[in-house]
Amino acid sequence: MSWQDAKDVKIVTKNFGVDGSHKLSVYVERGGWQAFRKALTLAPAAVTDEVKKSNLRGRGGAGFPTGLKWSFIPKEARTVYLVVNADESEPGTCKDRELLAYDPHLLIEGMAIASYALGCKHAYIYIRGEMMREARIVQAALDEAYAGGYLGRELAAGAGGGPFKLEITLHRGAGAYICGEETALLNSLEGKRGWPRLKPPFPAVKGLFQQATIVNNVETLMNIPDIVVKGGEWFAKLGTPKSGGTRIVCVSGHVKKPGVYELPMGIPFRDVIYDVCGGIPGGRTLKGLIPGGSSMPPLDAQEIDVPVEFDALMTDPRIKDVEVKPGVPFDMGGGRRLKTMAGSGGVVVFDDSTDVVALCARIMRFYAHESCGQCTPCREGTGWLARVCTRLAEGDGRPGDVDLMANIAHGIAGNTICPLGEAAAWPMLGFLTKFRADFEQKLRKAA
Amino acid sequence: MPLEFSAQSKELIDRLLAQYPTKQAALLPVLHVAQDQFGYLPDEALELVAKTLELSPAHVFGVITFYTMFHREKHGRNELMVCTNVSCMLRGGYDILRYIEKKLDIKAGETTPDGAFTIVEEECLAACANAPMMICGNDYFLDLTEKKVDAILDDLRRRWQERQRMESPVDPNRRTLMGVGPGAKT
Image 1 (cartoon, helix red, strand yellow):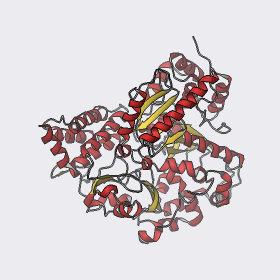
Image 2 (cartoon, helix red, strand yellow; image 1 turned 90 degrees about the vertical axis):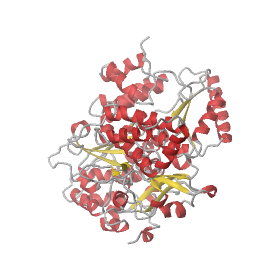
Image 3 (cartoon, rainbow over the protein chains, first blue to last red; image 1 turned 120 degrees about the vertical axis):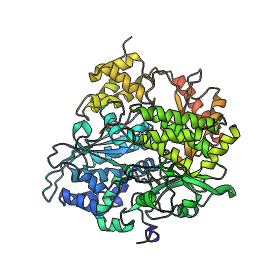
Image 4 (cartoon, one colour; image 1 turned 180 degrees about the horizontal axis):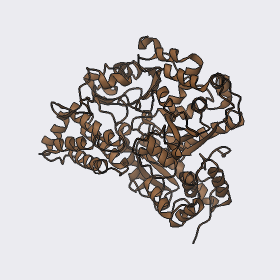
């Protein structure tokens, strides 16, 4: 199926724009909770199989196959936790917040189905602390789901599933980007500092309270009800060969119609910018874009015919390899080249009036602020990147600063417990690769 | 003087503790409850939370200082959380922050002498498609312009003054206590 055929398919935003979409009565009226009823007639393993068939991949950033992740729960696990990662804080990403506000019941139903498949009896939603309004909406929805008998009550389940009862707790964070990293999130949920854990053990084996745990993103779980009702094959067909379904793309920055759009997996960035978002305002032209949140290396204006899909952004030959210095590609290990990634779906578009060095410096200041401080390369390196890039942006650059930043970034990547190190190093190297002339021009001006 | 939780906070904490297999796991939610009641987290509040959850004050201190939403100093009644990250920066987020700073005559991180406003320069607040933006309490203020900021600040100040007149020592409407499990009032 080409991406044009899936243009009008809405799965996770199907209830957007409906009056009272956050209320249980409206949700049920529009077919809500039928998927859960169907799931309860199946064996738990059959639900996981359907998700595997769907080629659903994690929408939080890494794009890991969801069904496969679920199958990592050890068979002998006695307590299983499902944790929803609603700690959306990747700059440029604003989808989960809207999904929570408009359709919390779709998430709750997705969680109920996932919990049934996983054998989870108590699930947690870890919501970002700053999202006070969304926390109220989600808590009200949970209260309704309890009152409606969907949660906190034993329900008959067929096909050897036994009676099923689920509790869901909403847990608020308190302002730390790093808690979006799944092991930091688990530590935070346990009442500790949000410090990422060394893996292995992976959360599926030893996660929350040292028990088997699956951490899934909000958007990921909101796809589950439709997969159960319409089938994994239907979902897989909507996307590209290895990525099923649709994708939420949050477009911000220099476009005429910024917004949160549910789009076909295979849609190229060019169509997103010029068709969906109405193009660049003020008669200006495109300079580049960040394809999936600020952790991802940018694309320049010549690279936008690539689709927003996970694998394409990692491998498409039309995207230039990220370099450590001109002519020397960055090695991700084993000779693997870095292009970019689809990340969280946060597309930040910038036009030709943009001071790219200042933009990059702002990104570096963000990571310096958010580094948790456990690993020296990241704690010290992100601070160096922020200071050097900021002085360059402000006209105080010193000879050798461009190479210095590349060296520091290269020294961070691959040498930290969690991916925050790469989240700073990759865009740094990416901006230097794609917009090196802008950095050198700043240096010349400073001299 | 040692602080005590109000009856309302105690009830809330009991409900919270029932949601987790360990007392420690309730630390973040209980700290939210404490900050909602006391307005900030001085040493006395920290010790009260530590005692309630059977944790060491050092652990609680370590957690409070890790998360940006917990503060050890009194903040203004209205916390203006202004985003300046990339999406907002590209659409004038810094201009909005400077405008608010000038209008209130304080810098980001400071509180007005009357205690009405604190400005916090925030990282991305997940409303990028409506940049520039800020949050104050439960409200999102989107697609900001200087004119909009004027109206918002006027309105917040007027509501703050009305509340001052009510002269309640602990304002029951002061932020909502939420995210605390089944049955929470919203």
